[in-house]
Length: 204
Image 1: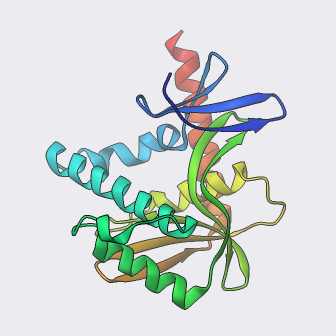
Image 2 (image 1 turned 60 degrees about the vertical axis):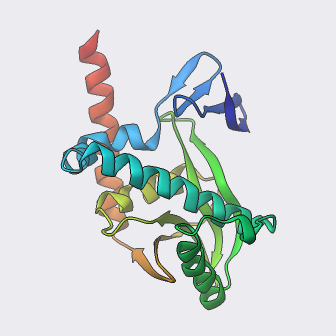
């Protein structure tokens, strides 16, 4: 496998295969947060033409990478594609306004009890509070983003309940949206995990 990233847990290594976008614990395929969310995201995704969906996915990957390199201090902005640069400007404005201090950047997380994995965009201090932040370049923020953030928070090893934010990047600006209905997110995520277990059981 082409391993893009990995994390070490008490029970071994969790590896991310970049070619298939899958997570592995040894020979066990660990479901991703995106997979578990599929029952509530697929209907929305099906409304988007495949070409546009692929283009938006590629744009998101490129913007994420630019923001990651910016945070790491290794981005050569002179080489940045002109389509990506305005989104980076939006990210820069966010950092100036909110002074984030990141503990995790594109960090693989794993929840060992219910056994799922994912890659959170950012974890750290935002406006004085520990937060999980997901970076989006989409025009609209799907409600499922809140459940995605909650799943990352459960899998993260921080002991405090974090603030949950979507950082929506626009060309030259940003919108920071907080999600606070933790009870609803918890119930929904538990239901999605139960549905996945049921589907796996009935496939046999």
